[in-house]
Image (cartoon, rainbow, N blue to C red; front, side, top):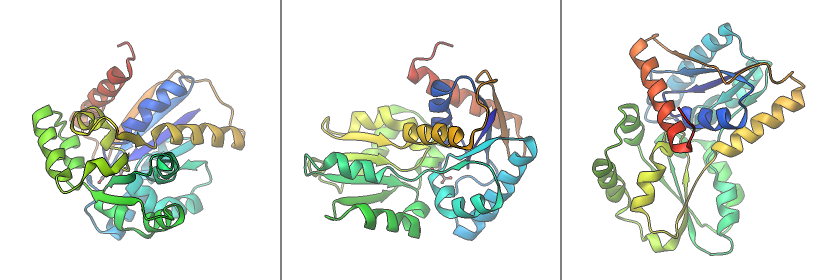
Length: 261
Ligand code: DGL
């Protein structure tokens, strides 16, 4: 079986890397909407039409399940995608619920990083209102971070300075967890680790998403296996240099996971 992963750019590779580790007997199709990244600073209706166009192209290639490996796209289009396509579709949302549960013991606050669009959409507001009874969750949009990631900006000094300036207004002793609510952000987990006090945990929703994918596939009774962890890369506009970039970025993530090359 072949599972499609969709994101605006290379962010969804952080989820795909987890899927490759957990489901090596599947094949994958990865689609990046290179022509329109970043989504998180654009108007919602515009982004919705980009999502449907790109996902439509993926469907023509043939996939058995779809992971919307993008928090922003999930917030905008997950319901309509499920109404449009009759295959298992898994979306992503910032891992606010587990974070709130985890901090119950320490009484410290939660800080959610995500794109401006994710944080301003009703889905996020509804999520926080549902789980944050005590008003312990704060949100910080990081509009520049997707662009840094897309240009493979991993210089430690540049990125340290960026995170320090973004966090300068926060009293970090009051926080116990940072939630990465955009799939591009886990590329920076190790750099962020250097900036944060050691007591702050960094969480993302990637492993949880792959577990949900696995459960959903079994529920649909789709015959598993038959694949070998093969990944086909696609992007809007079909740019070979961007395909190379996706391969480089995936290899980087797999090195971080300790996968032999
Ligand atoms: N990686 C995406 C997310 O999880 C979107 C980033 C963007 O295009 O702004 O939100």
